[in-house]
Image 1 (cartoon, rainbow, N blue to C red):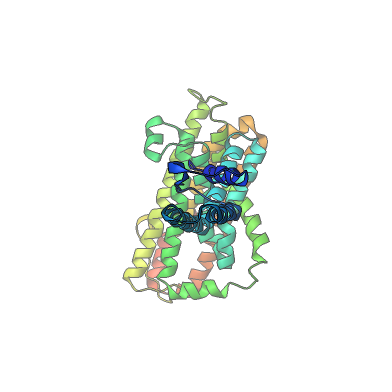
Image 2: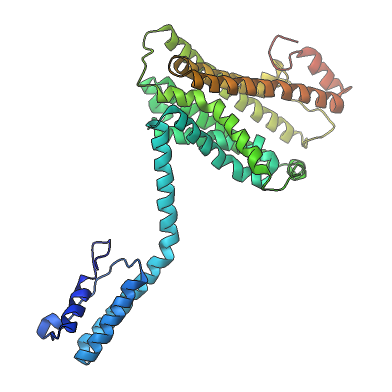
Length: 384
C-alpha cells in the first residue's frame, strides 16, 4: 500500500507478507523503522494494527519491538492530525477547483458560458449579503458584487495591476481595475456609514420584511442585472486579442470611455466623502430635521453629484467596452446596453425621490432654500 506522500507503508506490507509465508526476520533487518507519512484512510491504520499483532506473536517483543510501537504510535498521532485538518484541505481544494472552472469559463469558453460565470460570481457575493439584510441587495451587496466580478475578471484574464495597466496603455485592463476600485470603495464606504449611524442600522433592520430564503430569487435576478453592468469590461477583455482597434477612431472612443469612468469614479468618491464629513462635523444624524449641507464643491454643480458620478462611471465603462462588443457580439453589446439603461433610470428615479424627501424635511429652512435656488440642477449640471 503506497500513500500519496513521499513516504509509504510498503515496508509493513512486505513484513506482513514475509511473516505470513513463514519467514523469520533476523539480524539488523528485523529493526523496522517507521517514517512519517500521510495516512488518509483508517484501513492503513488497521493494516498497522494487524502487522503489530503478528510481529508481537512471532518475535516476542524486546527493545526493537518497543521502538516499533513508539514510532507506530507517533504515526497514528500524525494520522489523527491529518484527519483533523482534512476539512481545511477539502475547502482549499474546493476553492481552487471553483476558481479554475471560473477562469476557464471566462477566458477560454464561449462568451455565453463566460457571461453565465460572471452572473454566478455576482450571485455568490450578493446572495449571502441579501440573506443577512434584505436592503443589502442594493447597497453593500451592490459594491461587493461589482468587486467580486472585477476580481474574477482580473484573475481569469491575468489582467495587470492598475499601475502596470497604465504603463501598458491597456484600456480594458484599466476598466477592470476601475471596477474593482469602485466596488471596494463603495462597499467600505457604505459599511462605515452604517456602522457610525444607529438610525441607519435600525432602518436597515426594519426593511427585513421577507424570510431569508425568499430573498434568494430576488437577489439572483439583481445579480444578473449587475452582471449586465460589468459585462462591457468582460467582453472587452474576452475579445481584446481577437480584434485590433489600434489607430482607429474606435480606439479614441474607448479611451474617452476610460477617462469618463475615471471621472465618474472620482466624482462619486469625493461627493460621498464630502457629504459624510459635513454631516459628521455638524453632528447631523441620518434623517435629521436640520439642513447642514454640503452646499459647496461638487454640490454647487448639482444637488446629487454622487449620483451623477455613478452615471458617468457606468457610461464610461459601457463606452470603453461596447466599441469592442458591438463588432464581435451583438448579444454582448445588448447586455451592456441593458445595464447602462437600467442604472441610468435608477439614478434618475433616486435623485427625484431624494429631492422630494429633502423638500419635505428641509423645506422652508433658509440655508436649504438658498442652496436650492442657487443650484437648480438636480442631477445634470446646468439643467433644471
